[in-house]
Length: 79
Image (cartoon, rainbow, N blue to C red; front, side):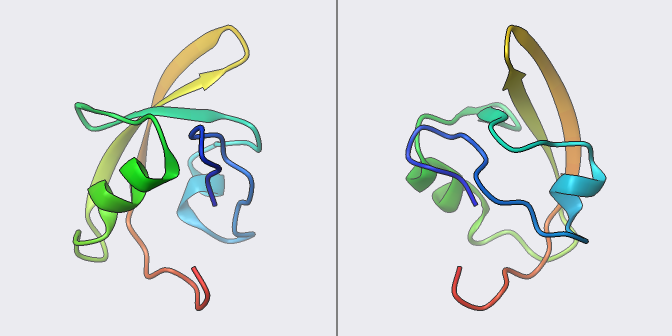
């Protein structure tokens, strides 16, 4: 899950984000080449992508910035 500022607040134990090395409080700044400023941006950018699609996340962690490739999975119920 991502909060309104793009920070990761929940990682599914066996999910693709955790497997890619993302951590709580990492901030998603871009998905592919699209700027992310809010949770709504994340939702709008990934909601129609087919399961299995690979996306590039640009992440800020403290004063470091890096990219990770993550595969889209079906969202858990309630998300």
